[in-house]
Length: 456
Image (cartoon, rainbow, N blue to C red; front, side, top):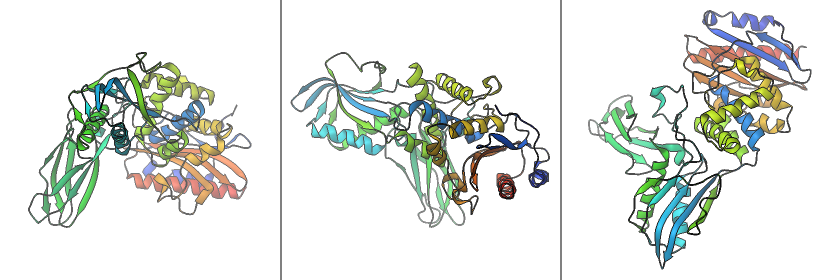
């Protein structure tokens, strides 16, 4: 058990006294992991919005409860009978939660059907995304996020990170810009009112909240090209339509519709002998997905991990059951779970509340597990991911996760100074200056901390 005292380091205290922080909330906690002692504490028990520092909890829980070698599986199945080159029945896509499933994987399934000499499907294209519950968005996500690439809907059957890419190319001055969507699909409608203009871009792009209609307006500068990803509505239907269109491309005839249907995912797919699994796509090991989740701060991956924890342990792939597992994990880390607020796995929800002390307890716990070295490498170092342009010269001294929302900037992770390992959390909420200024202050704090520790 760690006993907290008010511990001060003069150089850090002076940095925190900067006017930009006069009315902000600042919480800091630093632990010596070898001596199991507090090095510095400032408002360390104050509950603050963690933003993407929430991913430290989610990826830690996933690593401990699912294991580094866990893999997602997406299956292609058929229900019916083969008659020469005809499938007299349905073709089925069964989602297993894989957030890395791609259009290339769909094309692989199409190639499998071609290799099996199938030229016609008389039934429906059935989509089973029931491994996860129907709720596609966590509580607390802002409505204006919902067409953004960083806030796609969550489904057990995902493809292309549940986004399309809007590609914009300037033409001649005053004429409509050339705008297309990739992957090309009739599932998403494009309304293009963009023109080519002189000077800088003034792009307006949005999707209607309840429809897959993307509006592109404003102007793109002459000679310019731009690409912007937009999240789609109902990812499993997106996958189904892409699959149907790829079947058409290779001249496989279809007579049925695209429909959703639930199979008994947690048992056999179907006890009927007429259902056959034709092929499966297996994801990369979980450890690779966790690395990208933290390094690039991929919200889709974090929410899929959350729902997968619920599905794996409770046979209910819901946010609620996944959060139950996160709280169980926090309790194992020594956190008083009656004093936290957890609403998602990624940190996009502003309802999440954690303290710097609680985050260091999670980092401390992971340091003591068999996954210590693995987890350390899951957090980016200077020059990687979200730290690509931050903490120059730190090299492998620091591995840390950033977290940013409006008026929220946090960074938590590990420091190695000399032969001693430390963990830290610096959380800042409710500031009115630019986020870049807060990031500069955070860097000043951590550099002052390192200097202090080197002089010990």
